[in-house]
Amino acid sequence: MLMANRIAAVSGVFINKRGQRLHTLRYAPPAGWSPGALLILHHGLAEHCGRYDKVCRLLAENGVEVFAYDAHGHGKSEPQDPASRAHISSYTHLVDDLSGVMDALLAGFEGPGAAPASDPEPEVSAPAGSMAALKQQKQGGSQRRRRPPVFLLGHSMGGLVTALLCLKRQDEVAGLMLHSPALDVEWTPLLRVQAMVGGLLATLVPHARVVPAVRPEDMSQDPKVVAEYVTDPLNTVGNLQARSANELLRGMAELQRAAPELRLPVYVCHGSRDACTSAAASRRFVEGPGGVSSVDRVFRGVEGGYHELLHGPEWEDCARELLEWMRGRAASVGGGAAEVGVPAGGGAGAGVPGRGGTRSKL
Image 1 (tube, rainbow, N blue to C red):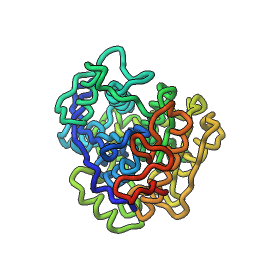
Image 2: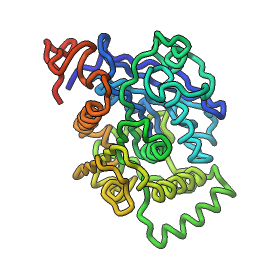
Image 3: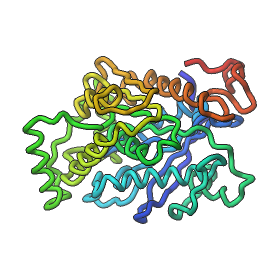
């Protein structure tokens, strides 16, 4: 495993269209590297982006510039009142926020689609290298960097959100990567009745936490991962709110209707023992029927894997597979961008800083 202690996580703030301040993190490759890929990571329901720190550091150590943020009502993002924690009043808000983050990021780079016609929304707190600082660079074109290929990575709920965004902006994305995504549920007659009742509750008592959540101990086979999840004050542990659960179902319904419209490269990874989201739905999304139309599509099943693949004992193997998959797609669409895993000015045999002059191996 590469040492990632040279990678600094830079905090920032993005203000969405609803005036909410969202906490952001940026992981840049080591000094002297040009990013071979730009990755935007979206976390799952009731958690936060900081949980993916070691994954982000590993990817950044290998030349991927990573941006992550806490969705509204999650982690360090607003709103912070108890009723609003992990509350989703509309799934479209999640998609809109991701689109706004993507606009702000692309504004810091030169290249097709890099600068939107107008600012999505003002931003604050702009430490060097943060999202806000990158956006401000578009005021001076000479400071803007060439844009590398853009990839999206979504875990669980984040998989749904990133897939929905790609329905609108897939021509700007080099690849969509989904981990344990919440793409659909297995619709039994009982579940259909429960969904109808849930739709009513979502209107009458939207904040009521009445939808049973998966037990934390069923999310990972590693007791340490479970304990860290339960004791993390930035997570929202327990039942889901009626409105949040219903909105996710609505988002799933939209994706199922439109999935064949997706034609960009797609990589989906799912554990066979996932008790939280449906591995069968992930396979259908990739392989059909009713799945994506992508020619370049991969379903990666992890035998015995639980929901928390990027936190459990298999996390590094999974992260390196993501890196390898990005590397292959970035090479084909980079258009002159630096290769993933190669320092600026280097070629296929360039050395990795601190690695004795040898290129990193997956």
